[in-house]
Amino acid sequence: MVTTIKVKDKTKLDLENLRAEILLKSNTKLTLEELQDYLISFAIDNKESFFEYVMKNFKRKNYEKMKEAIKDWGIDTSNIDVDSVIYDNP
Image 1: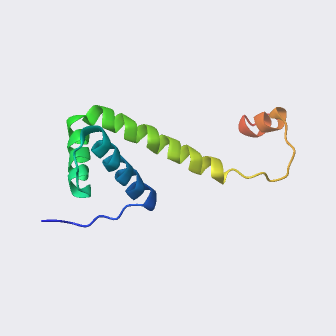
Image 2: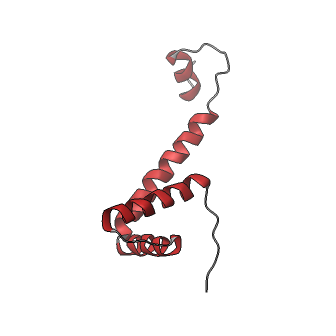
């Protein structure tokens, strides 16, 4: 049974480039489905490394989202002002 999955345009281009590189280096022509099967099998066989990779990228994405949410409110503050709010010191 074949199921269609949606991927971003950049991901599709990356898959096509990887497929072309495999063809050039090994003279082996793969379909996108075969390439996906190999990638998934590789991820399953190397779960620990794959999980580390995913978590590293997940944390970076969240950091970038948090960074985008930071806005300059146009208020000048000093570390003393910030400490007094955080630590409730007058």
